[in-house]
Image 1 (cartoon, rainbow, N blue to C red):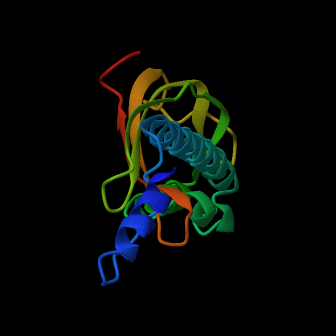
Image 2 (image 1 turned 180 degrees about the horizontal axis):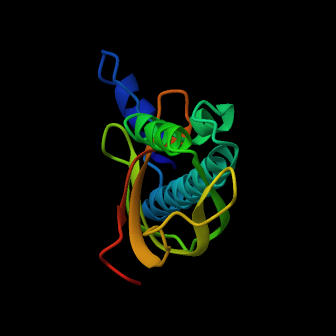
Length: 175
C-alpha cells in the first residue's frame, strides 16, 4: 500500500477530511534533479560568457558601442562599462583587432540565491589581441596584451536568460 493510499484510508474513519500530500520524491531523485539544474546553469552561464566575449570583440572591431549583440549577453552594470570602453576607444581613433583566447571555468553555482548566479574564472590570453589606430593600424603604445586572470558573474534574469552582469580583468594576476 502506498503512502497516499494509507493516508486516505486513515482519513475515512476519522469523520473529517485529512490533507493528503503526494509522497515526497526519493532523495536520489531530488539530488539528480538538483545536479541537472546545476549542470544546465553552468552551461547557460558559460554560453553567455562566451557570447559576451564574441560580441564585445565584434563590437570593438567595428567600434560600435551600441552593437545589438552586446545586450544579448550582457546586463548592467557590465553592459554600460563595455559600451563606455568601446566608445572611448573609438573617440581616441583606435580599435581592437586580433585574437583573444579564453579558457573559462565555473567556480561557483548559487541556484538558491535570488537571483541565481554562476561565478566564472577565466585565463584570457590577449597576446594576439591588439589596440591599434584605425587610420594606419599602428599598435597603440603601451597596449601590448598578455595572459591574465578574469572573473565574471552570470545572473539568471526573470525571463530565464543568463546574462553576464559583472566582470573584472585582473591584469596584475598572470595565469
